[in-house]
Length: 417
Length: 91
Figure 1 (cartoon, one colour):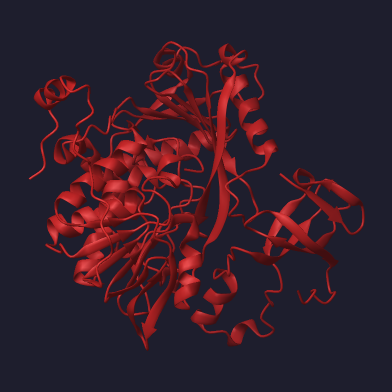
Figure 2 (cartoon, rainbow over the protein chains, first blue to last red):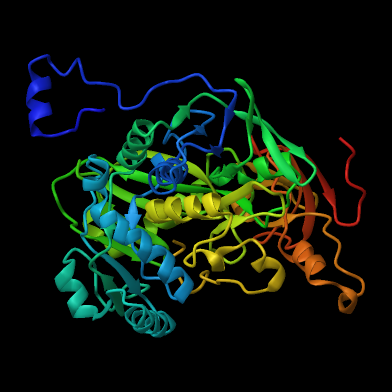
């Protein structure tokens, strides 16, 4: 049994200069066969393994990761968590996740630093105002907390926003979800990894999938850089590389992988205690506990796996940030990076069985997957274990692109996620 | 960020262009005959290749003409540029 993290373990380990902490997860060699294999050791994949072991009693499972866990988009996002989506299906999905977030640190015995500091979405034109009011009503009908704020209330809630009517895209109003906020993204991957490992899940890092072996209409196993591993169930949670894995299995997906950029500033004293997102000018900003401004930019419009984005995307975002927050005009940016996001035509994810027996996909989260991590893992585990979707992810099946029953959150979601 | 050699204007920064997605997806000749599966294939399913991809671009802030590009999506290196209607290079 693993030692619990607590104030006592902290004190105890202080006596040995914190050099004898037990490893949070093992580094095992692959077994010959598993009951299920999860491809992708990010937050969603590790959460899937965790809930498979915890709620569905599947202990003989592995997570294969080509790099190190949490080294992909889990460590590259801007950590925003919210559930104020327009459509019923999305509201159900994202609020399921938000409810798990609220107790996650206790459940995992790992501080994911979930901070319900509120997320504000700004309106800059009349159509924005109408859309955001409509979304506020839709949220409340779905039991999701949402309020509409006028310009004065926004200024009061976040005083550094420039609410002058003379700027190019003046702030006309906005929504606020108080239960929304941020979490420490690395801790989410580490916490789930530790929890899954404790229940016997093998986490195989530096193990890249090279092929998927099929026997007719079902899967038999995966070829990896550490050899062939047999399994009857494969859950793919490979984010930007979902299409690469799908091509190995001969499956077509409606995805395009594009670079999404983010950047952080030098650390400063507390200046913004909420998350502010703006759809029309595409800028969002929050402040990390270290004091850095965390700024999210948009996606490039071309397919790329290069984990780099175009400079003009960052420039556009910073223009908008400076107009909304003139106080940041002399801030220096420390780091900028890109992650590869897999975008669905309707900007909603796929959590689904496929036409191949034993092959499941959890992909298409596009620019907004981090917030859904616990819910996505829970529902995907349910789908894999029962070979049937949970009612909350039934709408997010892969066949919606054939039936036309899309969950169109492109215009409806608050910002490009 | 990279430079694209527009077949009409010459080398320009990528920010002058807009990407038009996968090239050589043939518009159905008889839309009324198509099944739902075939519509899904035409409208939504994409190769999304990591490696050499054939794609369309338009020089939005230049000549506003469409053309094709062969690009390695893992490095953003452009291998070839050819006009609409021309045969794609074999390599």
